Amino acid sequence: MRRGPGLNAAAGEPRRTEGSVPKLLEEGFEQFYLTVRKNYYKRIAAEVGTSRNSLTATECFCLEIILLMDNPNISMFADFLNISLPNATYRIRSLIRKGYVSKSASKSDRREVRIAVTDKYRRFYGMNNPDIHKIIETVEERLSPEELVQLTGTLGRINALIGPAGKGNGR
Image (cartoon, rainbow, N blue to C red):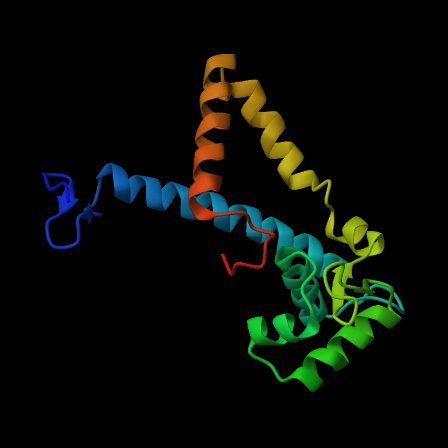
């Protein structure tokens, strides 16, 4: 285990002291994440309750979890949210009635039912998220081509370290 001036001697982790690179990285990442989330929730709040088949905030949350878990079965969904199977089934049925979720047999075991978000939800969710597109546009305008290549590589390495978002691994 490497130890030195920038590492916590006991844990071998970077020290997070005021002004240190790890602390600045943590603060920068947190600010970026919170800004993206804030914009997402603002957009969702503007949509909630605007039509007869509209979604509640809880339903939006459930749909996002289903999307991120990448076609879980109902039991996996219930376990992830720490809710009962009947509660999960009730929520899923409501989302199916509204057209935001579909059920299908698992490819590996036809007896198992998987749930997935529909195109209707993908349009609502904004898979072509205008906030993300605006961020990308701004980054492309302000960074050099070399910096863009470096940023792309760094993001790829970070994603590899933390794991894919949509594989049901809880990350």
